[in-house]
Amino acid sequence: MRFLFVSNFYPPASRGGYEQWCQEVAEGLMERGHTVHILTSTYRLSQLNIVEPKWIHRILHLELEIASLKNAFQFFTHRVKRERDNLSRVRNLLDKVKPDAVLIWGMWNLHHSIPALLEDRMGNRVVYYMGDYWPMLPSPFEGFWDAPARNILTGIPKGFLKPVAKTILAGEIRPSLRFECVLFPSKFMLDEFERKQVKIRKAQVVYGAIDTQVYLQSHRKERNEKDIISLLFVGRLSREKGVHTAIQAVGCLVHTHALQNIRLIIVGDGESDYEVFLRNLVAKEGLEKFVQITPAQPKESLPSLYGNVDIFLFTSIWAEPFGRVLVEAMASGVSIIGTRVGGAGEVLMENENALTFPPDDPLKLAAQIKRLVEAPELRKRLAESARQTAISKFDIQRMTEEIGAHLVSTAKT
Image 1 (cartoon, rainbow, N blue to C red):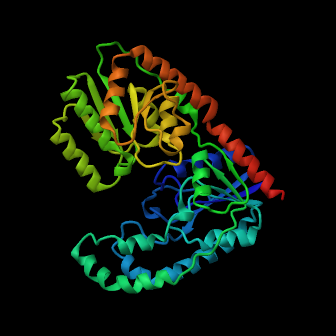
Image 2 (cartoon, rainbow, N blue to C red):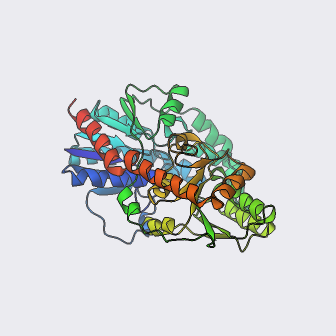
Image 3 (cartoon, rainbow, N blue to C red):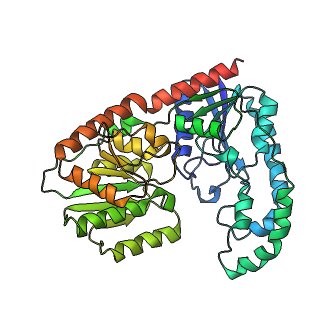
């Protein structure tokens, strides 16, 4: 069958694990004999020095350019035209591809008129995989106009134009969507949409996943009790990820409990201000010998990264829809300590496949780290259980099969 996937971002021009799912499921369906086309935005298109296959169509304008000084003026000069262009390009691609069904992934920062058009043209043959909150979020331009200007050059025109722009936005009504079939990566997300009273005609949980085979093949080093215990955080550097909690916990272990055989490795990019805050926190706590902050790594290097550490820390404060990095670490045979916020609560089970702690609580996190440092057998038991959880519940083959079955069923309606 022929499927069209629609996503705001798509690897390698992506921003997180949600888009990696899109790629992995698309490639998995193609391996099963289906034809898949990807419709996505021009995000980072100029930076892609690769020749892509013809089934990837990077042709959609984002509603708001990310980190651009032109947004204030383009709101008035380009916004409406960009939406018209997008709708025209969607129509043309539908006529060219003639998909049997459409799967909509992330739509944040894309016009809601795009899924409305797809529902209108495709009828009930539209499926959503809802791994974020985009249907409930305001236009990204609302956040743009409310946010303070970064410098005086943008502040003056932004302050002058803001009242006019806010009036325009207040008078606009987004198209309503039918949401005939919505798949969620966790029950938490399904419950959140029901709690927010988003009307969905058919909803089902299809748990998020990873290619566990990639991580199962990573070779873990044999360690002894005298080795340094390495802690790892992987993810976006932003306050809601709670990375500071990990640094504070290490400070507690070093200065209060006199532990010297631990090292924390933080891997990720994100908000520059928050990264500066983290580095200053390391210096303030006197932890330069104990904490290392490095840039985000390509996904190909993650298996070896996980394979060289003892404990993975999942420190999120906000309720994440799923938590892909959790499953990557679990499949790699790493002991996990994490918060059970959002979808992570359906992955982490206290003292079964992980230890847990309350969000933004460095003292409780420090206590759980100390517990694992002093109990290598507990680390081993939790790691083995976590690996079995990843294999049995969160493998990409299962996710692809389930999504593919929904698409085939939808195409036949």
